[in-house]
Amino acid sequence: MRAFALIFLPLVLASLVFADDADFNGKWDIVVHKTPADKAWWLEVSGAGTGALKGKFVGFPGGDTNEIQNISIADHALQWKWQGKNGAPDLGYEAKYENGHLQGQMTPANGEPVSFTGYRAPVIRDRDDGTWRKGDPLRLFNGKDLTGWTSLEPGATLGWTVDGGLLKSTGHAANLITTGRYWNFILHVEYNVAKGSNSGIGLRGRYEVQIQDDYGKATESHINGALYSRIKPLLNASKPAGEWQTVDIRLVGREVSVTLNGKPIIVKQPIEGLTAIAFSPFEAEPGPIELQGDHGPIEFRNLILTPLYKPQNR
Image 1 (spheres, helix red, strand yellow):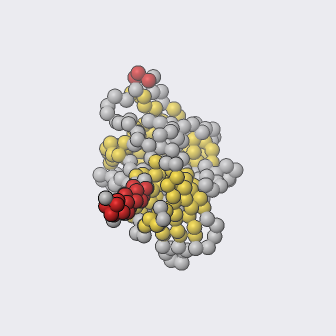
Image 2 (image 1 turned 90 degrees about the vertical axis):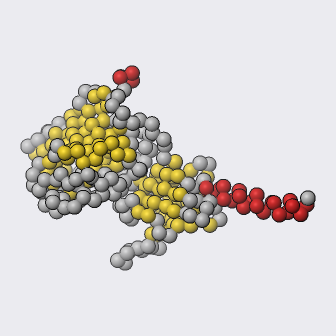
Image 3 (image 1 turned 180 degrees about the vertical axis):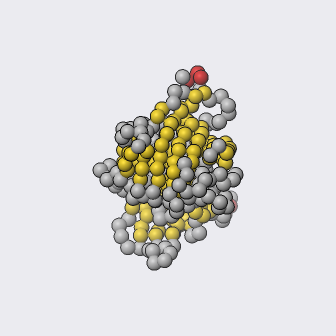
């Protein structure tokens, strides 16, 4: 009996180790502890506690949803690396599972570490099931000034102007966010993107619908109208640069639909997680609308948000 116990004990201990490692599995919304608090990250881990560990990451320095090429678990710490390109330094990430959260830090090859905390992505049960009703439309931009908007970075020079009912960025402006916070809605936006320019619309400060000069290009997950790096449009409905375009975005829970210039290009597709524009990681909470202003000249007009509600919750 004693011999059996001696053999059995290491197996129990090994299973406990694997069970601890399995706690890393899942999707994580990440708060980055830096000032200004203008970025949030996202991590997905699968296969922890097995021989098939995999990871996806949205964070610094990349903006895409990247497959992690170098990921491991050692001494109950999840570790991954970002190999710098074109002379950029390598970055190391390490996180431990503590009290239901990830506590970690990013360590550059040279420079100060940046700490972060990961929270499990919440279950969001709202679905775009045809039961939602429209509330009263809200005009987010009054055509006269920036009432209702503020800079993502407190105290930063805005770099936006209002002229002739248009909201304009020369391409070197701060990202704007609404002072209001919103949950489920339909967002109507009209924009004019300059040749070679790029912008984006952040939904709840988490998910970006891409704006880009992409007339005539093949569809992919970064093209005009895409849910950036996550959802590829059904077709390219873009107009040439310099022409006014219209995008209508419907967001219910994590399900998004996008109509560009009158053509449905994304229809009730699930959003896997945060995109690179994210700064507000807590996905179960309402968030602001964000306009990207630092990637090239862009003009906006007629920004109208219509809240969606359940009749019993009105």
